[in-house]
Length: 112
Length: 120
Image (cartoon, rainbow over all chains, first blue to last red; front, side):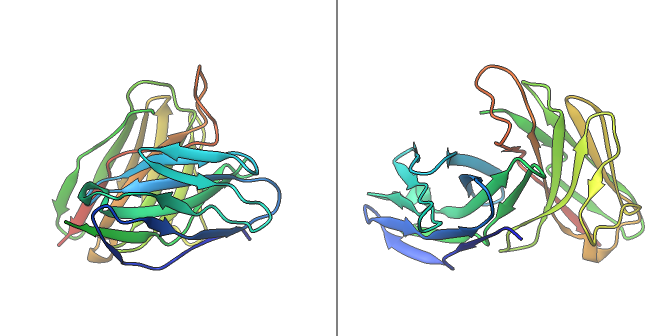
């Protein structure tokens, strides 16, 4: 079946450091790929998405590129802030079944 | 993005009682709503998918009679945890999808803020 694998956290960074969270997926067909962010005690917020190979999703300084050849969708941000401390979830969606498949989540802690 | 609300945000109840959680889409009509459960420091587990006007589709291992889902309108879905026990304590999150309208993507789900259930 479909699956999403993320790097395990926690990832601890200093403010203004470069952030990368690796995400790889296994799926047949052509899924859409997503990054969601969850702040403490809250639900998930859509961060960015990409719907086809080589698409780049971007939002709030975060970027991720849909790489079909490596089945990856790594999240990057060039300069993190304390407010970026959260849990980040990579997910895929396929029209058949209309379900999101989530990775395990990566906790990021940014220290001042 | 779409705005989704949940009520209540927190609930504490005694073992054996039933608890109803509401999920509302505030600015669009949602044909499909999803209910997830999240344990501390873990990912989301899909419990069921509900389509407006029809019965919910439950994931394997989720008890239909314990987690009752009703999706009576395009803006409201409810999850009722019947005869709750301490092991039902969790963070329950709903999401909406299957929308239409300008700028809405059917592959994107928008999530509510979650409801923390504690069963004593």
